[in-house]
Image (cartoon, rainbow, N blue to C red; front, side, top):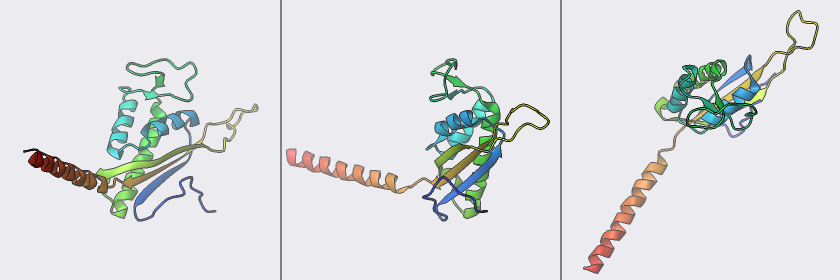
Length: 171
């Protein structure tokens, strides 16, 4: 059976991805962490998750924040240690996949980070309906485009030339 991915604009040459299936973590915590690290550089996201595991930085909760206490310097937040460790492992796997493809690992950005509810099996040996927590996580990395920095440098040079021309005309 073929795996269906949530990210449809995947380019094999420019991107790398990693998927965690049926992880024993909370979907709600995973959604908050994925929202928090999305569109961030890989190095920064890994550092952020390591700080959450060390309980130095809290993850801001924006959607599932009912009865969640405020944390220093932010609104409602928590320290989802187990979930952060699982997502950090998937990030490292995606980084290894990018390195195997020959991408520059120091220049990677998280383009897509998604958490979805997985099938929830019953706990073994229980007679009542107690289900396990399961989550699918998909992460896609892409190299940061360097064209923007070159374009900014060109536009700055053009602006400087224009100001020099105006200064010469004013003299």
